Image (cartoon, rainbow, N blue to C red; front, top):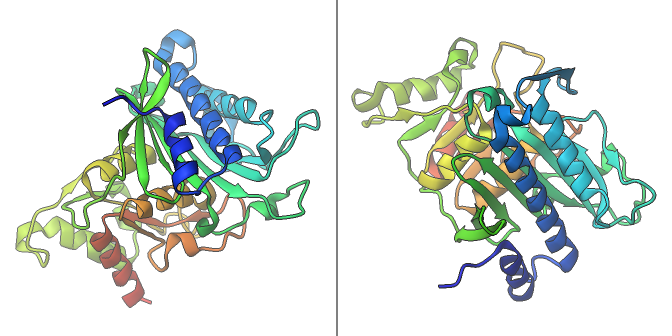
Length: 335
């Protein structure tokens, strides 16, 4: 069977499902092209002089890696001139990035985490890019932060690229979740997984166990049951996996099932969670739901959360449906 390129796949989605138009299709292709550029930079590693700290901080007060800064620049430069976007927002920037006046503007808003899991760069562990597309409100020609504050249900497309042994792009436009592998010989993404499905049940979980002393009681209850294994109330053993790169952990769950958790904890009571709603939680939740999984804050469906600020943080529980429902029920019972 002849390989199906990303371009062909998107054209077929446009024709058969009507989920996307030509502008959105071209926008997704531009993002994918930028991801290829980031993949090349990541692949060069020390040879490209891109490892180590950039000696700067982002809006969250986190020290930026050189590749964080480079990836952000690659995505900005690739997308600002195409005429598809009204504005861009990045996890690495304090405020939305306006499209320069010398370029035409479009009807979409693009949000991205240019390099998720960047703490893993220097040790050669998988990292990735996450992105989300929203529609700019009607009549708005100069979008502000408020125009980005739309619930996840309003996403038109979302995806991530994982830079590992191979570079894989995972994408949804609301009609299933699909994966594409970068064919380095021809330089294009090729469809390698159509309508991916996450098993409803799982015996694998992903969480940073070093924070266990800071967790709230319902979280402790759930993890204690998993750790008790066959002798506990669940009656079977569970395995734990933790890469500390959301893209890598979610990709594993998308491939073979599991539950990813980053709960609220008491280490910093002022923060309602660690992960960013607009750049990480919403796009990943859209992808996971379209693959038959579930995603919540522990109290409500993630995609129903009404954002209040661009860099808002939330607790995240996503993956295999039955486990997400169970841990969410434990949190609801504790209210």
